[in-house]
Image 1: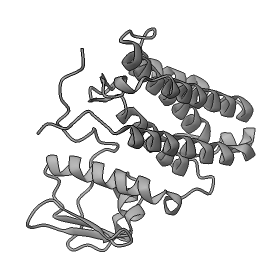
Image 2: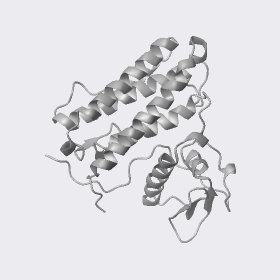
Image 3: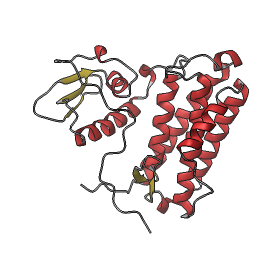
Image 4: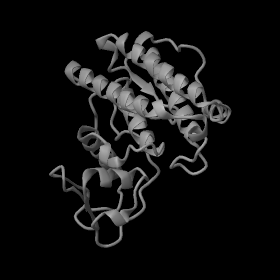
Length: 253
């Protein structure tokens, strides 16, 4: 299967708007962060809110690096590897609230500046994620939005899966379920009752049924399958986020 690397300029503009909106919602919730609450546990085992905020800031730096590479064809400095990112996470998580928030806001602002500098003909350029995934530069925006929406939940600041925008839930379900189908995930069908959407993967097997945000929360490891209607019991989803569905073409020269 070959998946087009092209995306309509109007769709890219809409996606940029969505990323900015996700960033703005998160930034607004961080206004009340204090040094004490920054050190409190997040949803993620072993991670404080400071860990999550630092992770988001360094992830934005990674996405900006990929976009700069796509824009210029030249690596914008050394690429941070997994060990470097882990070191930055451990060193940065214990900072005070003001420094954490300023770091994240600055990283997101620089990422958005890089998107504004991207010529339209460079958005289809293929880039490689640290995990080895190949995808067009515009897909980096989807990754950034998914990162912001998912980890906003993890911060436990009042933002829950119910608050996820419908458009985000629909995209994330489409993308995740397509990848699960390519991996022969043993669920026959997904039914999002509030979206009037369904996805068929196989002729036999369990069906997962529930609101779209509940389905996505389960697939993302942020909600139990007990919140879904299914028979028989559902299998455990693979580690999330999954790579894009297979099929991207060759890189642009």
